[in-house]
Length: 296
Image 1 (cartoon, one colour):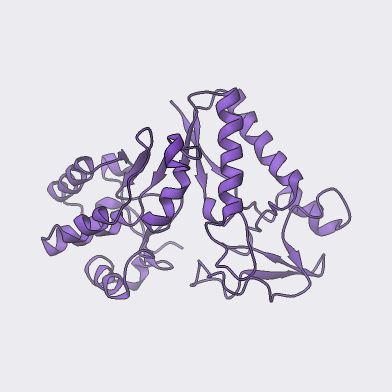
Image 2: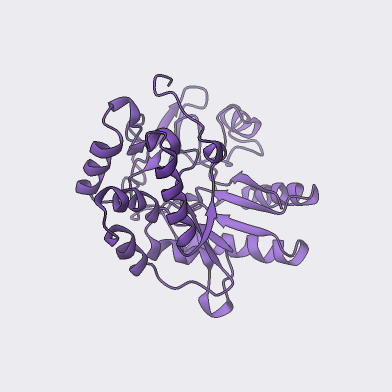
């Protein structure tokens, strides 16, 4: 089965939709993105890439307005309040499913909607749209897998499985981000508590749903879902060179992160396989692929 990455939250600023939106505000794509005359809205929304972005708003000199983005300034957020955007996303999902794709890793799903006075994450409208996605896909493409990428605490992520009483009516799987750095902490501290504590705080999920667990992925080893003390500990233990750090995390592959020691890599992999959930391996980790901290 082949599952592909599907970015629902944003596009590139080079995307034809965005180029049309910035050049023709009154045209059919004018409201495909979140535009404003100033950068004062959604002040409670955290800045995710704190090492590169000073604001969630960027001024566009062509349209002479600000556009909203939760990630990089070259990744403008789509406007899900526009029904046309919802239809475009559903059409894109159908396009790939018609080609034979078996499922999707739904990128950055907590941020689809924004609402003044909130942190603009995990909003009810987001879950409502995901339930619609699930209904339409189940009706036309049964056995399709939806995997939510939501870097949040477990008590928030469980909502992306949907209604527990219905066996889950949103995503079939979701990544368990907080357990990942705690595996590294547990081994280095020779203590089970970092892992056992977060698992104890993880709510039950529908019986036909599953967590996706992992040691590394294409992003930095995120340290967002740890305490400040734990973050400092991880940096001190696994990223002594500042070049190994990126945003609030560690930009190293698994093998160099573990000093290229095969026994240690096998230990970490065995621990991963022993935890509840479906293990997900990042390509290259199975052969001990390295990295280059002098790039980027």
